Amino acid sequence: MARALIRRVVFGLIAVAGVVVLAFLLEFVVPGDPAKAIAPRAQSPAVLASIRAQLHLNQPLIVQFAGYFGNLLRGNLGTSYIQRQSVASLIGPRLLTTGVLALAGVVAEVIIGGALGILATLYGRVRALISAVNLTLLAIPIFVLGLLLLLVFGFQLSIAPVTGGAGPAQLVLPALTLGLIGAPWYAQIVADQMQDSLASSYVRTAVSKGLSDSYILRRHVLRNVLSPAITMVGLDLGSYLSGVVTVEVVFIWPGIGLLAVNSLHNLDRPIVMGTVIIGAVAVVFFNLVADVLRMFVDPRTREEM
Amino acid sequence: MPAVTAPGRRAPWTRDPAAAAGQRPARRRWPWQLVAGVAVLVAFAGLAIAAPLFGTPVHQDLVHGLSPTGVPVGPSSKYPLGTDLLGRSELVRLVYGIRVSLLVAVVSNATSIVIGSAVGLLAGYFRGPVEQLLMRFTDVGLALPYTLAGLVIAAVMSAGLTRVIVIITVLFWSYPARLVYGEVLRLRKRGFVEAGEAMGASGLTIVRRHLAPHVTSMMIAYSPLNAASAVAFEATLSYLSAGINPPTASLGNMISDGQVAISYAPLLVIAPGLAIMGLTLAFLLVGEGVKAFNPDLRRLSWLGR
Image 1: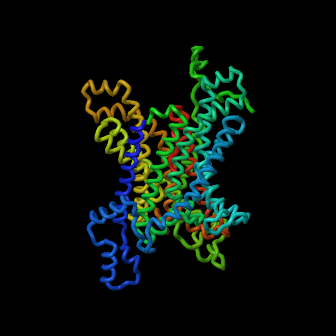
Image 2: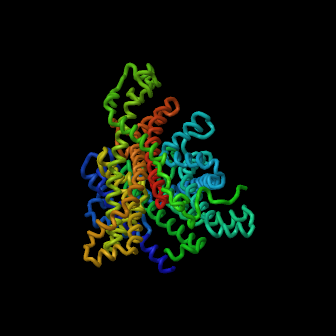
Image 3: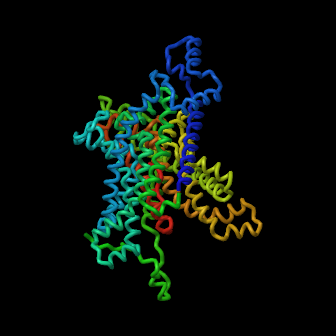
C-alpha cells in the first residue's frame, strides 16, 4: 500500500511538472509584449529594452525556463510584472477567498445532492421528478445559472446583494450556484450506491434478521455511499480551488479565478503561471487525499491502488 | 419510513420469465429519452440550417430596433425576441448562435473522442514505455485546470471557430483516453487478444480488429455526453471572450453582451441561456437513451461543468 501511495505521489508530481512546462510554453507564445503592458506610454525602444532586460525577457527561452523552474523548486513563484509584488503574496489571500467559496459550494452540493438522491431512492413517486430536476441542472452551464439566480434573487426580489465582494451576504448566491450545479452528481452516486446495496444479499440478511429499516439504512446502506462520495468531494475541492472562474466573474468574487482573468488581459505572465500551477497542484493533491481517505473508509479499495 | 426493497430490479439469479416459459421476449422499444433528445436536436439543426432565412445577424435597425432613449425594444411581431443593445434582432442572432454551438459540438466531439480512443487503445495494448508516455501525458491533461487552461490557450490564438474547437479538443481528449485505457486493460485479460497474438497478428491489427470494436459502444454512449459538455464549454469560453468574439453571434457572447442590461432587458440573458440549456439537455437525453440500451454503461457520467 505504501508503495502504491508513493507511485501515486510521483505520478502526481510528474503531472504537475507537465502542466508547468505546458503553461510556460503557452505563456511564451501569447502575442503581445509585456514590456509595453508595463509601460504603455514609453516611446523609446531603449526604455522597453531595459524593461525586458530587467525581467530577463531578452534571454533565450530555455534559460528563462530554467530560471523559473529553479525558483519554483525553491517555492518562489516570481514577481508580478504590473503590481511589483511577489506572486505568492498576491495569490495567497485570493486563494483563501476562493477556498471559502469552494468549501461553501461543496457543502451546498453535498446537502442538496444527498437529499435528492436519498429521496429518489426511498420514495418511488418522486423519482421521475427528481431525475428531471437532475437532468435540467446538469444541462445548465454554471454562468447561466449564476446570472439567472442573480436576476431573480438580486434584481427582481432584491433579497441578495448584486454588488461584488467577499462578504458573507455575497457568499450565498455563488455557493448556491455551485451547490445546484454539483448536486446531480451526488444525487446520482447516492441513488446508484443505495440501489446496489438495497439489492444486495447483506441487506436481505439484515432484513431477515428482523433489523429495523432505519437501522439497516444507517448501518448497511448509507455507509456504502460514503466511499464514492469522498472521491467526488476530493475532485470538486481540487477543481474549485483552481478558481471557479465563471462563478467568480459573474458574482465578482475576488478569488484566484478573477485574478487570473484580469492578469491574462494585463499580460502579467507570472500571475497567470502561478494560478495555473496552483490549480494543477490543487487538483492532484485533493485527488490523492480523497483516495487515501477512501482507503480508510472502504477496505475494498485498498488493493486497487 | 418506506420499506427497504430494491426498486425495479430483479435479483441476478432469476431469469426473464418470458424467456423461461419459452416465449419470445417482449420487443424492445426505443427509450423515450432517445426519441425526445433526437427530436429536439433535429429541430435545433433545422433552425441552424435555415438560419439565413431569418435575416442577417449583424443588421442594426436604428429606427425601430431601439427605443428613442436608445434602450433595446421588447418582443414584437417584427422582432419576436426583441432586439439587443445595438438594435439587432435577438431571434436572428439566437439562430446563428445555435448554428455555432451545434457545429462546435459535432466537430470537437469527433476530434476529442478519436484522439482519446486512439491514445487509450495504444497505451492499453502496447504497455511498457508507450503506455507510460501516453498515460502520463493523459494525467497532465486531467490535471489541467479547465477554464484557466482554456483561457491561456485562447490568448495564443485568434478568435473564431478554429480556436474554440482546438481548445475543446485539447482539454477533452484525456477523459475518453482514460476510459478506453481502463476498458482495454480489462479486455486484455480475456482470451481473444492472446489468441490473436498466437496466430501471429501484428499489434496494430489486434488493436484495430479486436480491441477497437469492443470500445466502440462505450464511446458511442459517451459521445452525446461529451457533446453536451462541448456546447456548455463553448458558451463559457465565448462568455469570457475567449471563444467566438462579436460581431459573430454565439450563445455565450450574446449573454456576456446582454448581461449589463439584465435589470431592464432580462430576455437578452434568458433567451440564449435557455437555448444553451435546450441543446445540452437534448444531448444529455440522447446519452440517457443510449445508456438505456446497455446497462453496463449506466455509470458513464458527464464530464464538464
